[in-house]
Length: 185
Length: 282
Image 1 (cartoon, rainbow over the protein chains, first blue to last red):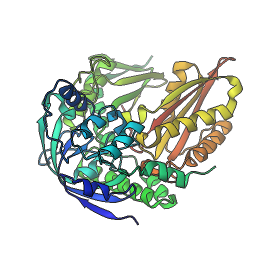
Image 2: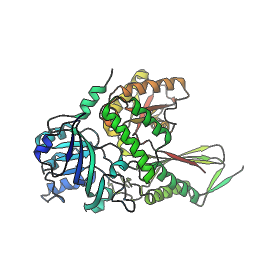
Image 3: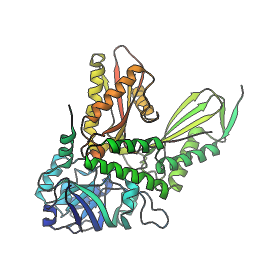
Image 4: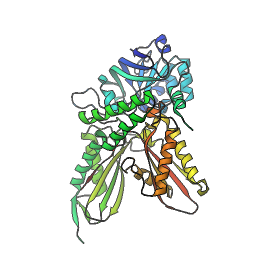
């Protein structure tokens, strides 16, 4: 069985470089949510020479749009959304220091190339396991773009959040390798 | 003719309850399919994903949380008996009021934007997609099937040539599944509509998803095609979560309808592993 890493952002280059596609990992600490609309706004801010609402140096973005928090809980269900929708924006954010993204599904060629260039990593959490994953989120607050509702940027405190390294910074791709291994005919 | 009155207010309450139930409680036939798949899966990561999906389903029901954060667009099928008369409002308004109530009070995610161009969220997950069918009798059957975007986005329709035949259908279904890869959240449930015309075959694919999981088509040719498609899809190696494995789909359901001599429409409606639906009879 592959190695299990324990990650705590901010992530240093050497931590990212030690990750290999197919490795399992848990994350503890602070991460940020952002999905389609938040990404568009962040890239528009960069285009206009404005600062990002959160510093991304060494940080992790989780592609999720949670359900409303039930009473007494920090957040509702919060599983990963399809990462390829963020492909047009992701390299710009990696250039700002973003070190990891959590989502589901394969990334495009430009993102895979940017992972190499910026020494970053793409992680996947179990798709659709929104209830289960929410148990690893111990605190949540909206820190930018509150008008976007579920698509606002949330600051999450997470504990032992389980992920699998999908694309490492050395060109490794778990989707490609896994499908090749089990394909028949 | 006998006419049975059903108050719009009753429909609102039923639809609201079904929206919440469908999102929180995955159907027992789906849970059994997860358990079977976990036994059959060869990939260790695939087995782990399936175990997490079982944990997730149990947790969602026990803790009253949506199983998936994408609570979907509410697709509502209403089979209205010809002897039913809705009083106190229009049926469609009642269904939408039910969706509004269910998604708000049930703390479900609202994912509908009013205009696909301007993209402002309506804030209450309306309008629902409503499919109304008139049937004999004095009852009303309501099915709520929330549909998330991950799998719906990867669905596809093709107007094949009759010469493409069954081989062409198989190729199109497998290509659609391969293109979807991990993004559609496998293991999938796959609805395939064949025949009718452009819009009818899309509807057939959607209706195919409502059949009890893995129940074969009553048409022998369609049932044989279902088996062949399931085998072909599982041979892609995509597997649970798309990380590689044998269990790419839990079931393939095929629905057919007569069509034009020149046509062979095929629609593939992918459903993620959160194969949600709940129903009630009023």
